[in-house]
Length: 277
Image 1 (tube, rainbow, N blue to C red):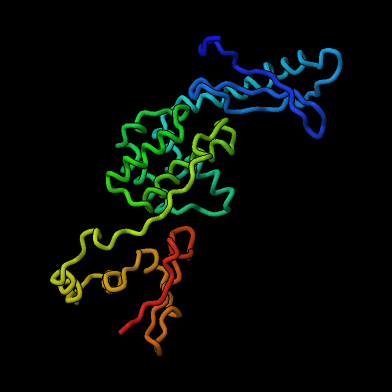
Image 2: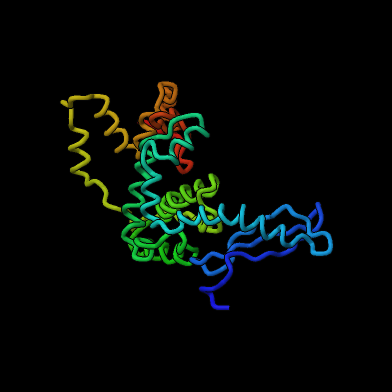
């Protein structure tokens, strides 16, 4: 049979604890293979094994549900991702209800920027539809992004920015098949010290520490402290008086403050102590 004329589904029998049950598997035109199977709940019993009853159930009940979910597969991946990653989108509202709290706007912005910088410019993903997305294209994207200078940590962040919306769409039955479900995490590789990004010069550092007249002394302190210790903005905001040991002159970094979420653990297990002179 020609691929274009292939039946939308086929019936088969499966042995289960409840007996031999009729199942249906559904053809995916985009991936050109069967990607999903559903039980009819009808036992293959009797002279004709109730095949006609099972076929009617699939046509009238299961097939319409499957076809309804295929509409999303025709949408461009990047359009769907950007629709999901904005405040008050259906995905964000749904996840906030599940979590019982607001999701950080900084976190949402981080995902949007990852998509804009590392997904949209990639030729293999810029126009691909969700139905055409597969592991091969993701592997091609990984190679492209790495060559473009995307580190393993940013690569994982960007991959998550794609996986989270697709997983949500599958969990909420908007999508019948998650094309990234089998894609594994990217292994983190520490950056090569010899290839570190641009750093402040001695003259620039001296200029920053020589500032005494600044509109907001707290902001100046945060800037100078981050330069001295290498702390993130959330870690600076998460500092508490109890984190400073006046006797040992040790500063303990253990919180990462996020708007709407409060104190959280530091990113990438960055907690630790810093000696203060």
